[in-house]
Length: 354
Image (tube, rainbow, N blue to C red; front, side, top):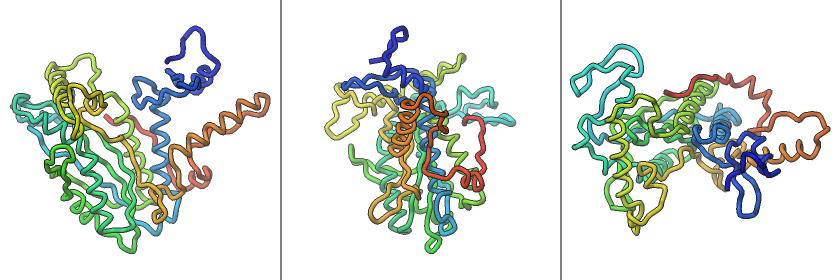
């Protein structure tokens, strides 16, 4: 149930005041944020989601004894499911497999198959479906080799409509490997699909770079924030002038995902699972290793989105119950000393990822 734009319920007005454009009334009568992670649907909730995760990412790099750890930025991609148009994001035109020389002005063709008739749409949506299982197996393999490993991961959509991942990895220096060892161990990990028993593996393109928290730490967090900005956009192309081939590609992906089984007992024609509406993806776009009895988890301070929601709620209630009191400080987004962080980190703000 959405808040009426003419007669606003007091509870809805409270949520609207916090920036949410489409508050929702729960079964208990409480108005809450819509929680959308897509900017075009609710910019406020999407930005809140991005900000929460960015704070968690920073807390695992800056808020602990970082001198005792080595850090890595790992990127893993999906296999090839067929040739796609090569379109540069900037610079000089490049020759494509279609015979043309594409420039940045042909951005609408980026990721579109050269031959839709032979492109493996079924394989691509199935890989998206099983990417979570593959990462789980990769995580286990990395921890088998380096027991102190913790991670923060962002799953980003490539232009062709398939997922790839960026992961910040932290390993204690006493057992820290080379970046090449981390890359090879991760890229060669494999898994077996729980749905159809097929082999799931990463593509051949993989990259891993080591960095220092007091060196490129802020730059790396900024890079992941750009990736977060990108994954919070609609996957569908919303430009005014889009080649017909783009729409054909997206329709083919939607159709393949609709026909795909999302589980062992799934009957696609009767299944309403969101996997069928997300090009096969079942994974959250962001996640981090959790704190347990034997592990500190990614965040040195135990920062989670639940903790941040509780802090914001406490701040809001304090402001609401004391209208005549001096305006309180902005709602906290992390368990940290802001002044101390300012001395450690230069927060770089750049444009959204292309």
